Length: 215
View 1: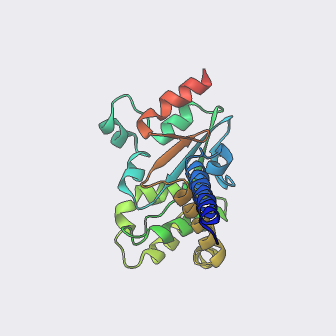
View 2: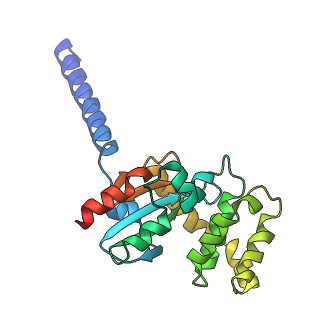
View 3: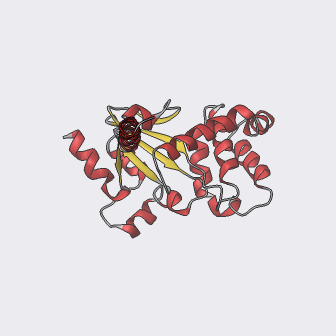
């Protein structure tokens, strides 16, 4: 191979590498679509054209705080909790809950998510969601969290044996893992993380963005 051929080969190789770098950079900087963020919209509360997606961890104190009006008022006196926003904009927004259990720091978060999904099988996802956040301190550090979760289900009138079986099933685990994988693709680094119609939005800016879309 002569010098001219070597030079041409080298230029082609450099061009190929630069093209790959550009494609990877472009892929990494592409904004996710609203449907990518919302996923299959399995756990939905409310109705409306505005879709608010929350990636959350049941063992995360901050995730519990945004559900509590008193805790939210401590962050900002004009801010509304998630339930308050849902009520204020009833018929205009729907909330989609997706799981992102931070298992490296929250030992019972994965099973709590699976428990909520098992409750959803008996049409009580959000009732169970509320209990998990309200009782977070009770089950978070428990070595018998599974038993506690079954107790909550029974208190809500669910079939305890059915709940226990589904909570640990591979199908339910796969659902939670699917949400967590989506959170990773979306480069979410903490919880709670919110998106409004596919746009990443800080909790403090949620109502501002919702109001602008309503108007």
